[in-house]
Image 1 (cartoon, rainbow over the protein chains, first blue to last red):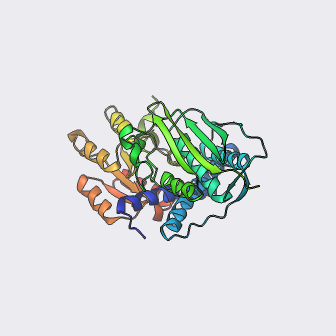
Image 2: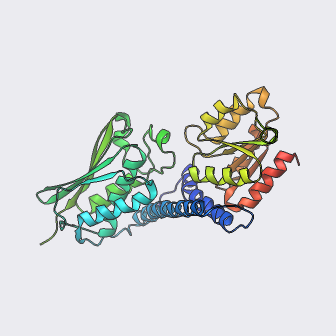
Length: 227
Length: 130
């Protein structure tokens, strides 16, 4: 297993502990008789706690998958999987986290369209591509499904900060973050794209992107369903 | 400005996470403090040009400029020599505490091992000068 440096440990700790601690403090306040809070405010606190749990879930999943990959234990079990259900599920999970309804699914494939992939890792890949698109952009994120021969392509387009040309060759490297990433979202770990690349390559598809200063389009290739 | 507002002790917080900002603001406001939040270190430095708070709270990990850099910039201004600065971090790292003290932090708290009540006690104590 490769070693990670103290800066990465610190970033991971920040990603996990930050939502954990604020949730703990919020619960302490909610159960404290000396803290005056009305019902609407209590609900707002609970929604924030739920959002924090989603954040912790997202990051711990990434760390767990990274460790499984390092020890060659990230084993996929492909099966015919409804693609639009997976995309919708990802959209709903991110609605909790983002709080805004910014993901638009442009349905190209029919509702029953299936791909041949492990549903858990397919969801992981799409969820994290969508999450990246949301955190590096303030506008709508468009998802399109394109069926091409033996493969389907899920395209995720954002109008965000884009990836500088000088960083594009390294963007799938473990722990790498583009030079402009911190200014928009300082919490990233540089794990998602590395994992997605490995996962998608493993199922025989792949992930690619085109990007400039007006945004990025990531394309995830997935095998069509097995008849 | 009313006498009551004028006499309130002022806390300036650099916090990019809106939930932490809400927690700090609502708890401290109920305790009678005047609270202002900057969403990053640069914004806090700009606010410090026009206000003289009784306490500044700085997180180590922040966007644009980390807490140490902000601390260094604050202490480079002689008019901030007596400003009380409480640093906060998630991870328990002794090197960070040493670095913060060298750069002039008044105190340092590990959020992970501290309850909100203990943070409030620390703030009260720093503001009262204990």
